Image (cartoon, rainbow over all chains, first blue to last red; front, side, top):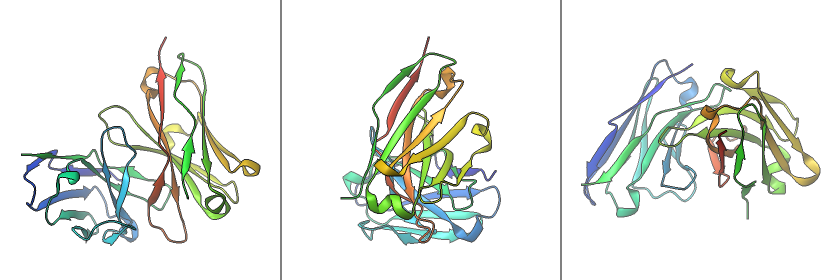
Length: 108
Length: 120
């Protein structure tokens, strides 16, 4: 099983700042099938990024994904108040999916 | 509008079985996979398995292999996840989500979640 380790556990930033979230895999993610989700309290996860760097439909361009192999990054270029939430990475596509434990992005 | 609509909250006794439904739009039901994911309070999501709505083929996470069954009823565009031998550790929100194998764009649509509480 591929273990996904997200860091930091909590990130405290102010609106307008840049956020950089990390997801490290215990082994290479096949075909870079790595996704990022945003989750707010009481809601289902919302897909932001798939295939490591492709934005999902309707996702603002301040969200970007990068990386390959075992190291992946989600960047939010200029934080808006609605971006403060929990973010999860997810490796998928080969019936052995796993999720990271999450990074909480909170207002400083 | 494309959406996944899940059945309502459940309270179960230890040892009982659970069956959660997930109703999809007709477009989704013809070609996609339905994935099942659960999330305990304060934890990350946990993948349970998938079912292809067209073929009925399934794949289960090893952790759940012995006590999960995923089925579908094509006449009403509904997928089901049944989990047996429940314990308190199965208390979680259960989600269904859509995966399009041809596009491989991860889980792009989610149900609203079904809260399941296992308690004596």
